[in-house]
Length: 103
Image (cartoon, rainbow, N blue to C red; front, top):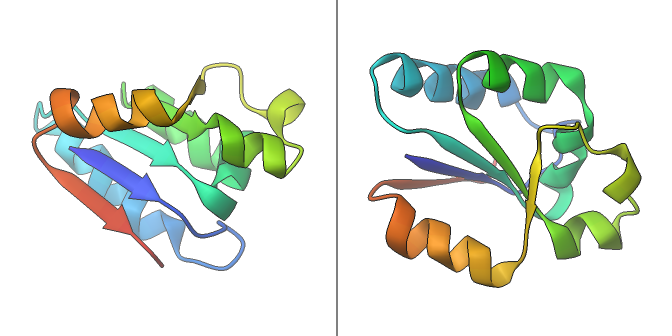
C-alpha cells in the first residue's frame, strides 16, 4: 500500500494514518509513505518518521516539494528523496493499492 500525504502534520491528525500504515505493515503488506507538498515537513520530524521506520515502512519525500520549503538539509536520514519520475514508478509499478490522505 502506498500512502500519499499532502497536508502539513501541524494541521492534521497524522496519528490515524500512521496507525493504518503500521497495521498494514504488521499484516505483511508492503507499506510505503510518501510525503508531498506541505506534508514534507513530517519528513523532518522524529515522531512522524521513527515509528514508520520501526515498522519497516519505507518513507519517501518529493524532492521538489522539500526544496521549495527549504527542508533538504533537515530531512530524517532514512527518508528517501524522490523525483516525479520515481513517484510515478511507485504508483504504477511498485504498489497495487494507493491511499491519498488529504487531512
